Image (cartoon, rainbow, N blue to C red):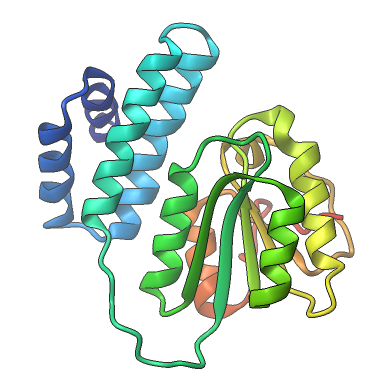
Length: 219
């Protein structure tokens, strides 16, 4: 983790909302929002997650840090007016039992920045409700995220269910748990593993997976 991420993580854990926002706004004067998410916010929140898993910080500390990170992401998000009623659609959510949502908000923001219509359903969404929403809205892409490794089986269950829908959406899987897992290769082309935000940005802009070992489709 770089020094900027460390500094921001410390501000999150200290509950210092104003200084955290100031640091981020100064960073954005010379860097893109993609760089902020990829190089600063994501490493900071991953580190905080590791501290919580090791019982170095309490669940209250983790919740405070998450709330301030949520505030920072919300303030820095740029909402653009609709320019094309026929643009592609993405549904962003976390599976049932998964309460982490900062990564989901970053993903939603990245899609918006690239001109997609986004339906952000948040974390901890039951599968039946997610399927019902997907059938009604028929998104081109459904993006899912999990922070903890034991959520991976349910994440895979959601992905396989979505790919069986009649309109055949592409399913993107990401999050800290996915970035640390070794997924087996598969012939399933409609499920895409994204371990870094730069990969997601590349996929959004090109429709193709990066030519590296992080971009693996799973079944």
